[in-house]
Image (cartoon, rainbow, N blue to C red; front, side, top):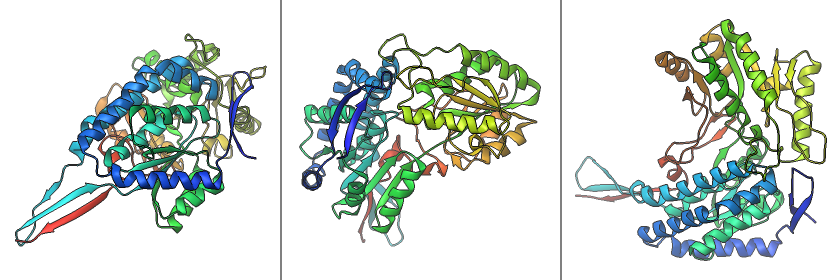
Length: 457
C-alpha cells in the first residue's frame, strides 16, 4: 500500500502515516469540487473576499503551530516557517483586496459602434500538485487567486507533507468556505493522471521537478487541459565589481542557504569578475564554513536538515561527481554523522561542462563559483543553463546592472538583492523552468475564461 508519511528529517523518525486515497475517495473529491463550483462561481465577490480574509486571519493565528508542523515534516527552522506562514496570509489578503479589481470588465472600443466587454469568468475545477519545500506558500499562490476567481481546488500535496496538507484543509473549513471549494486528496501518481483526464477538471498547476512537469504536461496536453508549471532553477548571481564586497558576500550566502538551499529561486551559480574573484571566494567560503546546523524546532536555528536522506544522498553524488572530475572542493561536501539528513554547507569551484554540477540543479546547500572575464562572459555563462527562473546582478552601477539584467534569459531578475517572493510581484520562468506565471495580477490570468460579450449598435 502507498502511504503519505511524515519522516522527521532531523531524526529519521517516522512520525505519522496516512494511506493513499481509494478510487472511491478520488471520485467523491471530484464530485464535491464540481458541485461546489456551481455555487461558488455565483457567490458575490465581496463574500469571496471576506472568506479569503478569514483564511488569512487563521494562518496568522496558527502561525506557530503551522511552523512546527513543517519543521517536523521537511526540516525548515521554525523561524523561517513562521515567515512562510506570514507570506501566505499576505497572499490571501492581497487577492481578497485586489482580486475584485482584477476581475472588472474590460471595455473595448470596436468598429461599428455598440458595446464590447471582456469579462473574467472562472473555468471550473482545478488540480494543484504541490511540493514539500514551501508546503504552505506553494499552495497559497495557486489557491488564493483561483478561489477568488470562482474556481474550486483539488489539491494533491507532497507525500512527505501529509500533516501540512491536512492543516491547510482545516483552515479552509474553519474559515467558512463551502464544502468542496478546497479538497485535499492523498493521490498516487496513477490517480493524478486520472484526475487530469477527468472531464470535471479544467486545468492543472504543478510546482516541482522537471521530470514531474514533463509527465503532467504530457497528460494535460493529451486531454487538452490548460497547465501552469513552476519547475527547477539554477539561478545566476552575477558580481560585476567589488564595491562593498562584504555586503555582497553576505547576500550571496543568504541567497544560497535560506531553507537549507532548497528553493527553486535560490542563488546557485555565482559568476564573479576576475579582479575580485579570489577575494570573493575566500570570504564566501569562510562564511559558508562557519554555518552550523541545529534543531529546526529551536527558534535560534537558521540552518536545518535536507528534507530527506534520499535527497541529501543525491546531492552528495552530484558533488562527488564534480570532485572526481577535477572540481575544487573548498569546504563541506559530506553528510553530517547521525540519523538525520544534515549536510555540510558546500562550495565548489573549477566546475566545467563535463560535470553534473554544471548543468543540473543543486537543490541544497551547495554553491558553485565561476570566474568570468567581464559582464559579457557572465551573461553567456548564465544563459548557457537549460533553466531560466530567476537571477541576481550586483553592481554599484545600477544602469550597468539593469543592462545585464535585460540580457539574461530568465523570468525574474533582482538588482543588488537575491530572489524574493511578494504577493504583488509576478513569479515564473522560461526555458525548462516552467510555463505560466503566478502571483500579482498574473495569478488571476491563467485559469480564467476571458469571455467576450458583444452588443451591436
